[in-house]
Amino acid sequence: MGVENEQVQEYDLDLGAAEAASALGGFDPVPSDQYLARVNVKELGVSKGGYPQVVQEWQIIEGEYTGRTVREWVVFGPRSAPFIRARFDGIQLGLPVGSMKAVALAAYYAREAQGRIARITVSQEDRGDRTYNNVIRIEPTEDAGTLVATTSGRGTVSASELAEDVPF
Image 1 (cartoon, rainbow, N blue to C red):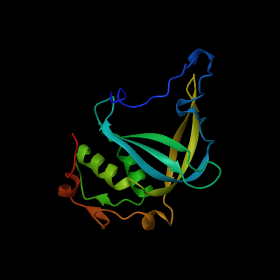
Image 2: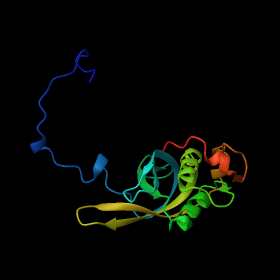
Image 3: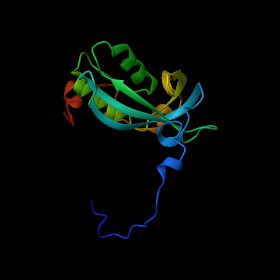
């Protein structure tokens, strides 16, 4: 894997003696509250159900939890239009005109949501072995429109603009 020709520090690592992190990444969930956060799109892919999906993190940019992230899987399925609309409104992203293919809409969202700022409301959910964060509300802020420029520069976009750069 390219390590053969580089100097690697050798040492023993005893995982049996280490205490497991309480959550992936070693962080406990952030407390239920409102946070000013920036969207960081991580991946555009397909959900377990076969629908287009955007994996994103909301990075908290203000307050005690600055730098912490809340991960979110945004599925563009047949019944998700109200939830997708809430995200578009919350990050002040222009809406497409009319009905669009979900794949193109997910690609557009992934491209245009990157770096946008909103005030998110986060809750906690216990799922047996650990506690997870959920983003339950996304509200626009005065900064959202000024901190990130959009590709189209308009409040709406056409179907041909949405068809660009679709990875699947």
